[in-house]
Length: 355
Image (cartoon, rainbow, N blue to C red; front, side, top):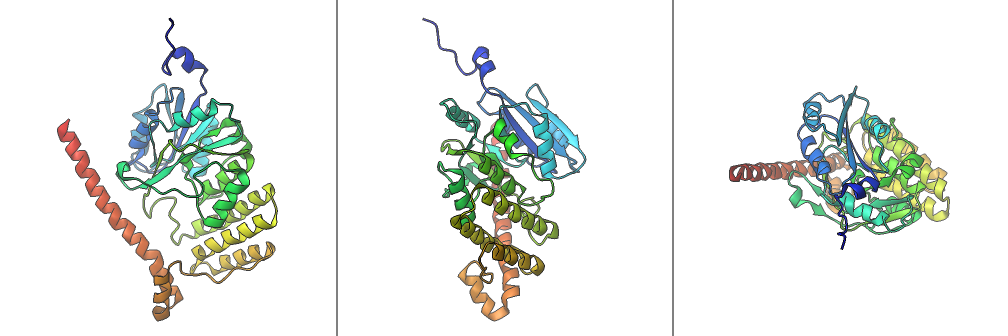
């Protein structure tokens, strides 16, 4: 009796969809090798890995070039931002499906394979595939997976309603998107230096026929610190980018459905985010209030998010309490990261001695 061909059989592999793993990188020498290794370790046999170095000033490019092979391509460009690097990577890709992967994040070895299994059962190419994700600092084995209301199958409108109302999200690496849907969504917006991924995936979701959540496909999201692209701080450039992203979020959502419930969700979304502009950019706060008025509603005065900061405010004032609220979580995260880094180095050192 003829044996059934396995996934590694070249005949079967040749007819499977090609998955493009696209990695934009900037000053990522500390992480890029592990990120590329996680891409190479994918059990899905047909893959290409494209790394675009966006004018790094450290050793990112030279480290990435060590991995160049039949499966791995590395290109470099003058610094133009993460969105431009992603657009360049996509332009070079040939895959039937697109896996975005930031240069400090990781994929479980079977992440893509588990998501691709769902496509083998008549799933529309307009369906976007998502997965669980966990936060970590240095040791991915200690990643914390905290389920949100987005961790399930949802229609586009329901997914966006939950995102807007609850301030929840999914990082780029959690998605797997067909080329057809990627082309429908259009390129990453190069005007955005903050929340570019949030704006981009709202377009992806709006152009889809739904989200299929694959519970066994895992992604690891590295919490990189105040120097990362995802940290907003008091940067005027990032605050202005956030404002533009918020405008585009609302525009995309209302183009899908412009109902009372959608407008209410948009108002809640503005309410969630307005505090990000305090106390640095009161001019932007006024613009956010104008957006709310155009939606037929008003925003409440910004609140300090937890009772302890509201209590501190009574003694030192709103502005200083807000400064403390911005500083303390960053300080706490920094201490936790340093401790995890020390344990990570100890574990790696012990592993090298064993080998």
